[in-house]
Image (cartoon, rainbow, N blue to C red; front, side):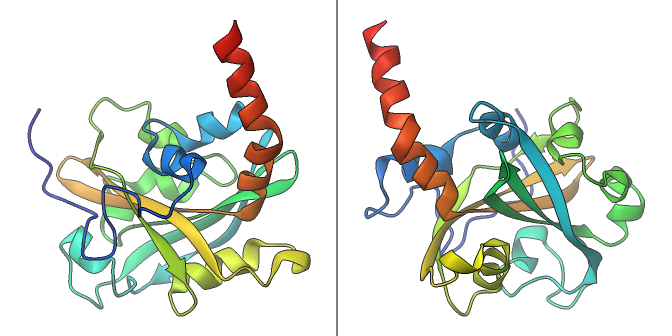
Amino acid sequence: MARMRFDAADAHWRETPRPGASSAQKDWLTRGGSLTAHLARLGRVTVRVTRETVAAPWADEHRALSCASRAPVWVREVVLAVDGAPFVAAHSIAPLAASKGVWQAMRRLRTRPLAELLYSDPEVTRSALVSRRVLAGHPLFSLASLALARAYATEHAFAARRSVFERRGTPLMVTECMLPALWRHLDAHGERRARGLEQT
């Protein structure tokens, strides 16, 4: 396989989850394949689009796309909910020109998951997954906080991951921030399910 031109890793986003991450966090931050498909095993997944617009990339994004720090990008932000509970806040970007060309289909998704576009095309390749702990001050923290119900608005950190997808030499980066409801669900159901599978 040809080496990808794009890499989401930097001093903060790393391939190995931080040592303090729980086993569930380490699992979900490094799982390959479609995150939407993984969530669908937990319940009914719905996609709520919260923002689609032209903007500048975040400070830790432009190098991963090999573009200038103020180069315009197309931004798509959604909340992935499982049985009505927000499990993931996602932020996807592509160079503006690419969003009208190679990646133009991302503008027409509406409430369909981006996974439909990324995992059905053999031309699409993916970089390694990288992750980090997101604290207040990072724009992803604000994005995740907005996705939460008011009762959980005091969350002080989130676990997030990202990777770059490439098609015809053009990048699209997806950043996924895991929300507290995901970890609560896994605590309540995931461990029992895993133990049940081990016993069968």
